[in-house]
Length: 231
Image (cartoon, rainbow, N blue to C red; front, side, top):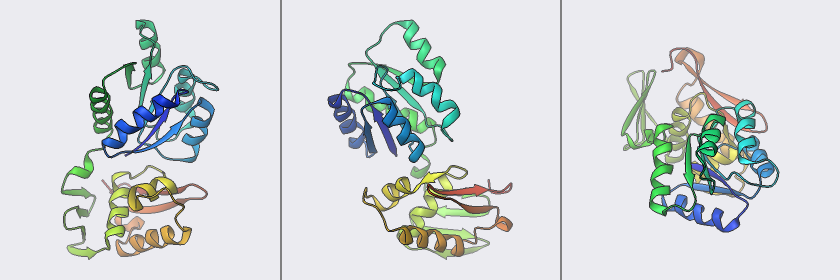
């Protein structure tokens, strides 16, 4: 999972990053509200951990802005030193999914992160098989079955197909796909990613007749759309 962490205290960002990375997550750090809002427009995240008092947009302003500006808004943990019940109420009413008061034990923070990701469907990858319409994905053997036939994919093709099915109808940025499938922050050659998308589109016959299609979001990434009978 990819997590955005925003706090004007760089030590806090490093502290939370170590916790999240220790759980196997990928982290992007931000030190003010404006850079976070720009990051949320450019990229895809599964969770945001947000401080209240930051330069630029405050945490509350980010929450209110996300409601109308961010497609498929990720869940948000507000983590702040504010302890008043009214502050907690204001944050939750503004759209926060959880509220953590600083300081907190690292094990508790890790548990809260993973609990929120589970609520958002982040544990789907733990199941051996998953069905999406007429497609059955076997994550152990890395095979896809469709129309009574097993379809052979390379390891990266399967990971990409699995990622897109799990996030169907959600637009994924190129960086999100690269970091999740290729596990790198480096800029992947455009033709490499496009080639893999083209291959799974062709091999899996992802077309309206089979309930799915891959839609290119120019300048951003890709979205696997379910078309009625896609499940």
